Amino acid sequence: MSSATETTRPRDPSGAPGAAPAGRSRQGVRALLVRLHFYAGVFVAPFLFVAALTGLLYAFTPQLDQLLYGDQLRVEKAGERVLPLSEQIVAARAVHPEGALDSVVTPPGPEDTTRVVLSLPELGEKQRTVFVDPYTAEVKGELTTWFGSTPATTWLDDLHRNLHLGEFGRLYSEVAASWLWVIVAGGLVLWIGRDRGQRARSARGVLLPDRTARGVRRTRGFHAATGVWLALGLFFLSATGLTWSHYAGERFGQVLDAAEGHAPELDTQLPDAPAPAAGGDEHAGHAGHDMSGQSPRADPADFDKALETARNAGLGGTVTLTPPVDAAGGWVVAQSDNVWPVHYDRVAVDVAKGAKGAVTSHVRWADYPVLAKLTKLGVQGHMGVLFGIVNQILLALIAVGLIAVTFWGYRMWWQRRPTREDRSAPVGKAPARGTWRQLPLPVLVIGVPLVIALGWALPLLGVTLAAFLVADVAVALARRARAV
View 1: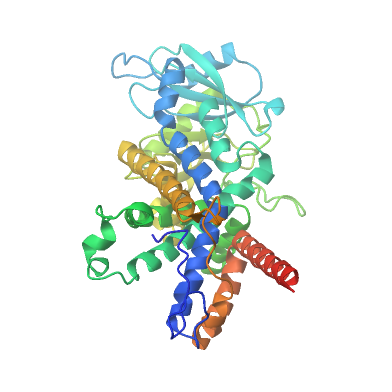
View 2: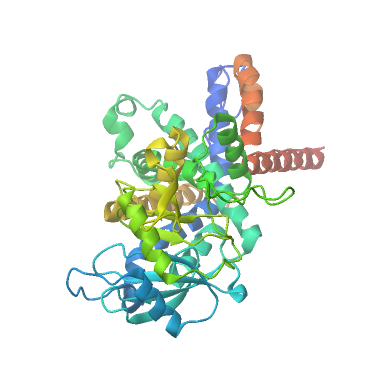
C-alpha cells in the first residue's frame, strides 16, 4: 500500500513544484488517490486500529473460554455411553428450576458438557445455560450466555462491535469496515503503479520493502509491502464485517432479497395442526423460537425422541434441540458444527407422530443458495471458527499486520514534517487540493455515478466522504478569505 502521507505535488511542463498541470491527465487520478488515501489514513486509521486490536483479542476467545470456564465446559470422559438427554435435563432443572426450558445443545466432543439453556425474563435476550456432565448427569455449573457465548466472549464481542457504547458504538465498526477496502485498494494502486525504476516494476519490489532505503522511504516500504501481503485478508474482513453491520447490512439484505439469496426457512407448522388465525403472526409457522423464551412446558422425554428422530434423518454431530413455541409447531433440531466441513442441516420434528416421531420438514445445507452459503461461511471465517486454530492464527496475523501498517502510516506523516527553523511543523503537509479538476472527463463521467452508488450501498462511507468534502471546502474558503 502506498504511503498515507505522500505529498508529491503535480508539476507543470516547466517542472515547477506545486503548479497545476496544463490539462487533464491520468496523473490526476493518481493525485486524487494520494489525497484520498492520505485523509482516509489520517482520520479512519484510529477506527481501524481499534477494530484490529479488539479483533485480535476476540480471535482467541475459544482458548480464553477454556481457561476461564473449563470447569463448566469440560468433563472427564467416562466410557462410551452417555446418559439420555431427559436424565440430564431433569438433573439440570432440579438445581435450576427457574425460567423456561429454551433449548438443549448436545456436547461438541467426548469431553464436553451438555448445555441446558433456560430463558428468564429478567435476562432479556441473554440466557442462563446450565452445564451437565453427559456421563453422570452432574451439574458442573451455570453461566449467563448470549446465544451460546460465554460472558467473556460476549464482552469481547461487544467490545469489537460497539466498544460497549450500544448503537452509537456500532457506527465505529461500520465506518472502519466501510473504509477499509477503500484504503487498501487505493494503497495497492498507488504502490504497484508508482514509477521508481526497475525495482518498482518487479514482483520483489512490490512484495518486499527496499532495505537500503532510509527515512520516510524505508517506512513507506514496510507500510506498503506489508499492506500488499495483508490485502486479501483485509478485503475479506471488510466484506464479511459489512454483511452484519447496521446500515450496509440492511442494503446487503435488500440485495439478497432481490437475488433470492437468503437461507431457506424451515417450516415448523405441523401438517395436522390448524392454520394460524387471521391477523395472527405470519411467521409463527417458521423456524426459530420465541425470543421471550416462554414456550410451553416440554417433557424431557420428548428431547430424547426428537434427538433420535433427527439422528435417523442424518443429522450428526452437535445439534441444538428447541421445543415448539405453541401446540401447532414442531420441534426444531439444527446442526451447529461451525468448523469446516460445516453441518447446518435442520429438521422439524413431530414427536407425537408415532413411537419414534416423524420429520415434517427438512432443510439441507446443500440446498442453500450460493450467496447464503458464502455469507454464512464468511461470518464464521470472520469470527475465527471456520478452520479452527489455523483460522485464529491467520486473523491474529492480519490484526497485528494492520496495527503495524497503521503505525507506519502515522510515522510517515511525522517523518515528512518540515524541520527547518523557519518552516517547522509537527506533521507533514497534506497533498494539494483541487486534484479532481485534473481528472480526465471519462473518469469523472464514470466515477461520479459510481461514488453515488457506493454511497447508497455503504451509507456511512457516503456520509463520511461527504463530511470530508464539506470540511475540505470550508478550510479552503477560510484560507482564501484570510489571504484576501
